Image (cartoon, rainbow, N blue to C red; front, side):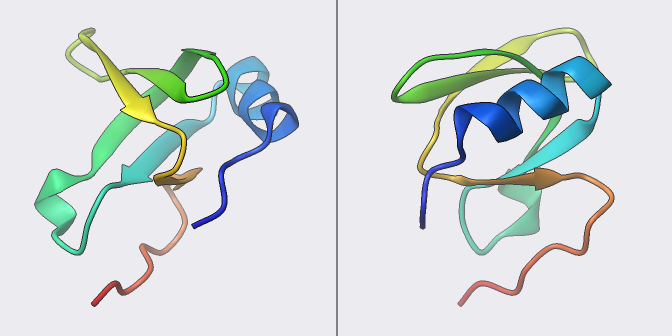
Length: 72
């Protein structure tokens, strides 16, 4: 998967768009929340319980209201 661009991450952060980070084929392993910060390799997401999670930028990051892609 292609990594998300800095411009896309900044747009999600500035507009306060809730995102979904798809880590594997199991939807239970998705991380949902708001983009807080990022660097070249990782992104920090604040979950609804206010905890932050540091994740790789290589994961699929999309707006949470979009349909989740089917992964095999």
